[in-house]
Image 1 (cartoon, rainbow, N blue to C red):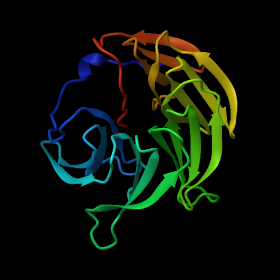
Image 2 (image 1 turned 90 degrees about the vertical axis):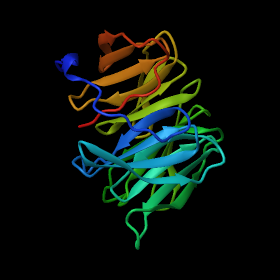
Image 3 (image 1 turned 180 degrees about the horizontal axis):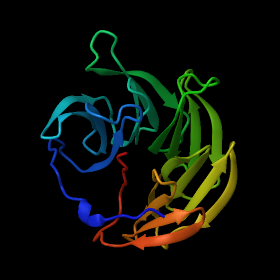
Image 4 (image 1 turned 30 degrees about the vertical axis):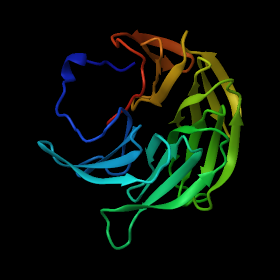
Length: 248
């Protein structure tokens, strides 16, 4: 288990510009050094891109409005593509323009969920899927895996009894969290294990660089997991847990 010194974590800066609550952050998986790409999930229907030029200077680079409903999730797929999900039941893939590398435009709309779409996770490109795949969770209780070349669903993972609130990759597996208080592990399109993680809705799950999973719940706690074994419970939040983000 990793050894965390929480005294090392301090507020470094504040980014202002949204008109409503920000619900998540995403980091470019292939370019973790400056310039750094951050995007946020929010209720004001805008997708904002922050370019970290220097530690002391952080600027808003672009803001895009393209939704009739709230943006629920955001995922950086590659340095040139991001994906967003919305209460309008769609997922949109955004690509950098060929002429202006500072602007994103919608290149695909993925249709398949029957209720609003929330968490997203990116599966890296492979020989079979040269543009990678995308994992999405929804209020319709399903987890879908998408081929980003043609926008088709390649796997439909069903088993949760209530809204799917989080998805993350654990090596070749997909792990999902839900309002039904469980975490579920999927492998090659099949459910391989499920366990009750909290006594209230699980709002998020992610994998840490050290290999453990961490989950956050409406019960205000975080839990650290090795497989199905809870290693530690973190307390301190005064209200419902909403999202988690790891910067490598």
